Length: 142
Image (cartoon, rainbow, N blue to C red; front, side, top):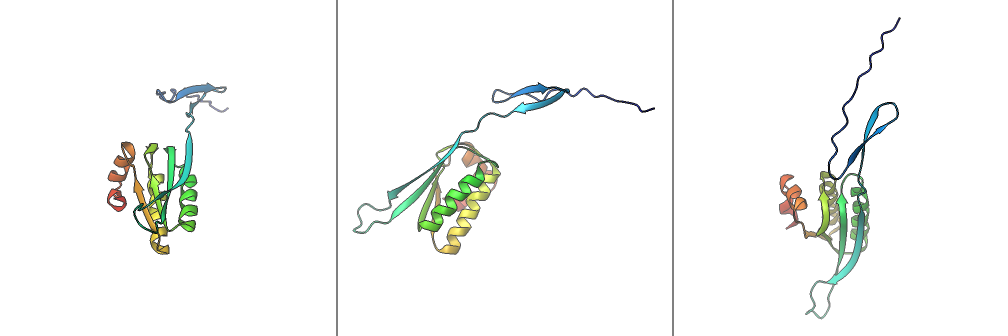
């Protein structure tokens, strides 16, 4: 004879950005919100008063930069650094920034250093600036 023990698990906490749903069999799961993410690329002149002006390639992610979307940002930065000598990552439109995003920025800075390119970061505000400060890499991108 076998003893059968059933445990009732409490539902996960639901927040304003996600809700909990009970599935058949008593399993609970969180409904993850849709996280919009996009990366735009454009060039801008570095010095408009110079006779010869090299353009800076701007890579501008928008939305959530987390472990799901960081590889997309990484690919965009890698392609930009491989094709242009001066690349800037504009984080002004980023709503959430995780350690995965920090890792991507560090890899891009290292790639630029090894290839002799310039890499900079601008527009970090709110949670993005806080994550860069907490991970102690903010000074690398000033």
